[in-house]
Image (cartoon, rainbow, N blue to C red; front, side):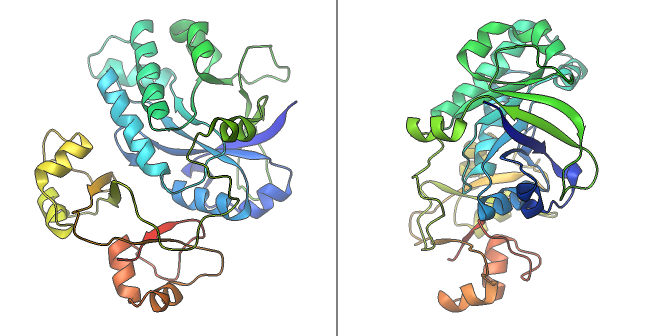
Length: 324
């Protein structure tokens, strides 16, 4: 069995996912982000569009960690990014030579023991949060730093660009970085899946799947926290005041050691204050922000402000927004 797939990031720009699916693509691995809470610029649109048209997806996060603790923080950033989207494929840690080079630039000697501890720390955190974990690497890096023991413990996504598969034990094989797929401008990575992950994950009760093919259209509670994308000019104290929490609570929840150093574009977890009746809605195909506002007795400007929507005319099916 081989299942045709692709993997993408912001490098592919705005993708016409309906054309991609019509071309015979059966799954997609989407870059959710990299490093400490940096979400890929196209992830949310890609995930929402794939959910809308029913194309199964997984997510991957690029490793810039150089300690086990930092790998856990990267896992938390990934979990925050993927929350609210349906994932039928694994959540993957992408670790390769650029990861090692970055660690060396920070003065850290990159060793096989360190590489294995990073993968284990990330994947264990993903599993602890109820998702199916995987790691990705190419043949050279795998042989130098990782070895077969990790591939026996976690699912393995293997990269080697060749016309003939070499028989390496893996769940997904990335065999080209120069593919051409309708709906995508320029080159795209091509993959073959050897495991029916949607069936495996659903049977195991992972990835928080209920078995329903589409999200519940009614408002629903968020269990522990909401997410907020830091904007230029934001301060942690200002965000804390806006959401009725404290700077120390935000620092603790997000692993922030210096509250005066936050960066635009990073995603924060924000705890609910316990007194507000927060409600959420998952956008469906054909929805407009004005119709949603009218339905729930609020305004377009209030929804835009609450969800950091810069253009009220550009919303995407599958995206979860806060109503109040």
